[in-house]
Figure (spheres, rainbow, N blue to C red):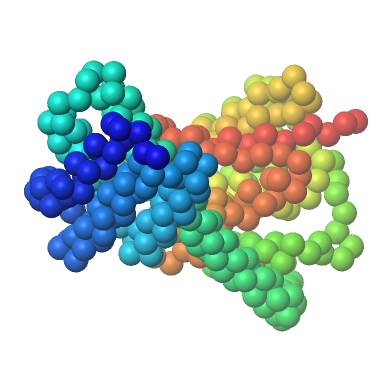
Length: 376
């Protein structure tokens, strides 16, 4: 038997159904388009029938029924890619309209408050089930998309690695021969023009090839780690980049020696590539940005036997969205860039048990490298 107040409410809902629906219709929110009105109307019918069932079913049966219906509503919202915020708003509009009509029943306050509490609980639980399902399914879709993007990136990297292993020697062998003949020409014709420029350009080409070589994640046969001077390495990089520094009119402040001699253990040529890439990128940006371009290199020893190297420039601030992706492969703002430079830099530093990060504020961008100091 249904209790008298619930029986009165059930009869009232059946009698006032059309009026309740008309009021609800006038206040619903449809921001996606008129085609979604039918979905809203269908959800309205569903909610109405659950409330009717609430008055006739037991607590456990009602919960199972409510969960099943809420899941179907969530599935429909995911399928049509509608705004879950609209759904929550329209459900609460229905709650408000229903309360307006219930207040007209002129029930005793004890009975009225009990009914209002039960209806409130229903709307809260139903909304929770529907929104929870919708959120979980949306998270799954986002996760699948992210996995697809990651897989696509990985496939491209694998392909590059396979290509690299097949033609890197075909590039390196003639390049080595050319560099050898350049050295011979320098020794025989010391006054011959442009040999230094040709040699420098070949070094740049060799550097770019090395970037692709590192993507294969394979060590070069016969290559061994050594202990080398960070101070000397940076001086070599600045000497190598001197023509570009001069051409860009950039002032470079190298303060590494303030901390004394620092030695690292690893692949010297790879760490060299990291500094070349970061400094060369800064030169490229600064030459287009301001009249007093400056690059500063400094370091500090940390307590955990590591050194923190800061390569900063007074160029433009890197926007937050771009800052979050600059170390990802194939991300570049340059027309002719590969988007591999900073990605390879991070790979190298992490391979050496270090870390590479970037911080950017207006007129100052810092690339921060931390590396273990060699144990003598």
